[in-house]
Length: 317
Image (tube, rainbow, N blue to C red):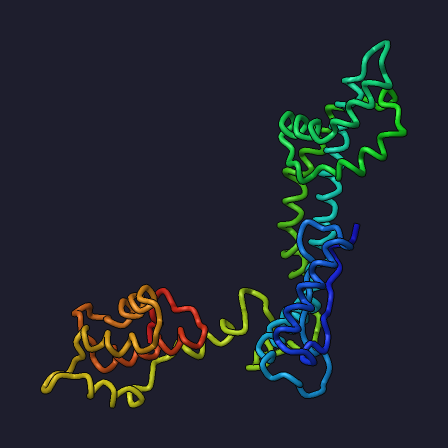
């Protein structure tokens, strides 16, 4: 029942080539799918988790991202423990509801006098179809139902006539628990953690301020977004002045839209991105760019090429 908590490390992955790593990773994923029975594929962290120099520098960026994911997950364990317990309770409650509805159906459809054994065998054989009927009747997701093959083995030795009828009051209480009580409890967890001072674990590999080598990936932070603030600053006009003057017509203090297009398409960014850059840069909306507007356009293009998301509006400065 704890298969979803298993995570796998593929260590010293720099010892192989890119092609070999792809083959090893694919074979491992295929093998794990047969061993670990979970709806989602098990998470495999690829890297070189020791302090020796990398043997294959090509993997550096990939390894840094994988390590950031792993260490962030470890650091968040104190904060996510309560949520995981509540989610486990929700899973068990939903499974209990499914079992109650299933056993009630099997008991109710048994004949009163004769043919018990034959009818029981038929219902066990038709269990997948019964799942669908119960799911439609009680508005339950099929994903909550247990594996029909496992349930068929368990039901084979049971007498359906001994099953206890479902208690409507208890079923209603269980539905209230799932739809009202547990969602409220999940909402209260962050507030109580803040009040009690529960914080992320201090993991040396990602603790402290983000650096060019590691970042704690919480609150939407990633390897690129963690440094977005450094891009949202006024550009240095002197960096772009020479290009601006080369594009300006003689006697003009602006670069025309046509000339600016020729410069910006050199970045090979898609047209929809360049349109956003133009909309942000052409502040006076006159179809041409002043030196400051041209510098903003070039700065935003460099920002996008560095993997950063463009802002929706420019900062006031």
